[in-house]
Length: 252
Length: 240
Image (tube, rainbow over all chains, first blue to last red; front, side, top):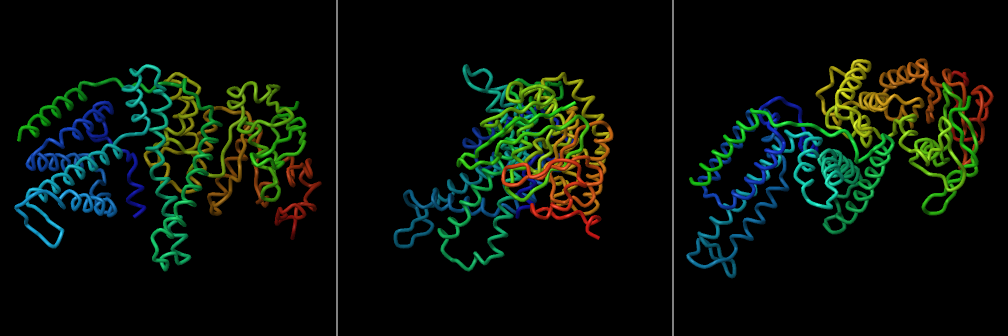
C-alpha cells in the first residue's frame, strides 16, 4: 500500500503532460473541477477517455495508484449511499425505512463519478509537476492579492507536495510497528485510532522540526532566486486544444 | 588561527533543563574534530550553535570572527551541516532541485546556480541517478546527495551529525572517503559519531561531551583510554 502512495509524488518524465506549463495545468484542473459538476454522463465518459489518453501519453503509473487506494473507494461508496438514500418515488429498492429511487441512484452515481475524475486528474497533476513549479504557479496567481504573503504560502504548499511520500512512509512504519505488537487483536477502532494518531502526530512534528532545521541551515530566505518559466508556443497550442475539448465535452 | 570560538555558552531547553553548561572551546581552520559522548550529552545542540540553529542563553559563538547571532546569513554560508536524518534534509524532488535549493536562497543568478550544480553533480558522480526521485535513493546515496547539496554552497566548515548511522559497510566506506577528501581539500571538518573505528585515524582533535559539559578536548591519543567512561566504544584497533 505504501509503495503506491510513494508514487503520489513528482515522477520525472519528458511527456507533453510533463512539459505543459504549470499555470495552464492549474487552470485546467480548476476548470475540470468546476465543469465536471455540470457534465452529463456522456461528458464524464468522454473526460475519462481523455484521462486515459493523458495517462498513457505521460507513462505515469496512475492506474497502479488508482488500483491501490482502496480507502478512497470506501469513501466513494459511503458518499454514493448517502446521496442515494433519499428522494421521492419511483423506488427501485425499498426495505423498511430504506428507499432507493432510480433518480437518486443515478445522481449518486454521477456524483461519485465526478469525484473520481477530479481525484484522478489531481493525481496526474501531482505526478507530472515538480513542487518547484507548484510553488511558482501558486505564487504567480497569489501575488495579485494585496498584503497576502504569496511567497511564503507558495513555498509551504510546495513543501506539502514534496513531503506527501515521507508522511506515508512514516504512516507505514508506525502501522507495521504496531501490527508487530499485535494491535490487530484489539477490535475497538477508537482504541486503535488513539494509539495510532498521537504517535503519528508526534512523528510528523519531529520530521517538521528536522526539516525546519535543515532548511534554516541552508539559509532559507523568502528573497530567493525566482524560477522563470516563460510560456512557449507549445503551451499555448496545448491550451487552445484543451479549451476546445472542454467546450465539446460541455455540450455533449 | 582560531576559526570557531565558543565562549562561556550556556543553553537551556524549553523545559528549562541545562543542555550546555558554560562551555568554552576553540577550533582552528582545517581541524578535523570528532565529537562523541553518550546520548543526550549535548553534542547535536553544540554543533547547532555553529550554524545559528540554536542561539545560546548566555555566552557568545564566533565563526571567522563573526558573531553567529549577528550575521546568520554569512555564518550559514561558512558552516554547512549534514544532518542525521537525511529524509528531512532533502527538499527537492529531483537531485538538481535539491542541490540548487541553498543557492536559490542566496538569490544567486540562475546561470551561476546551474554551473555550480552541474559541477557538483559531476564531482559527486550523481549523473547516473540524476532523474531518480531522492526519496527512493539508498541510504548512502541520500547521504552523498546531502553532502553535495551542502558543498555546493562552498562552506569552510562542514559539520556531520552521525554520518554513518544506518549505513551498510560499503556506503560507510564511501562516505568516509568523501569526508577525508573534503578535509584534504582544506575544509574544517566536525563529525559527531559514536563509531570511532576508522575515522579516528584522520582526526587531529577529539571532543568528549558529558551531561552538557566538555569532559575532554585535545589530541585523540590522549583520551582513548577514558572513552568508555563516557558511553563511547573504544576504536577496535586500540582494543586488540
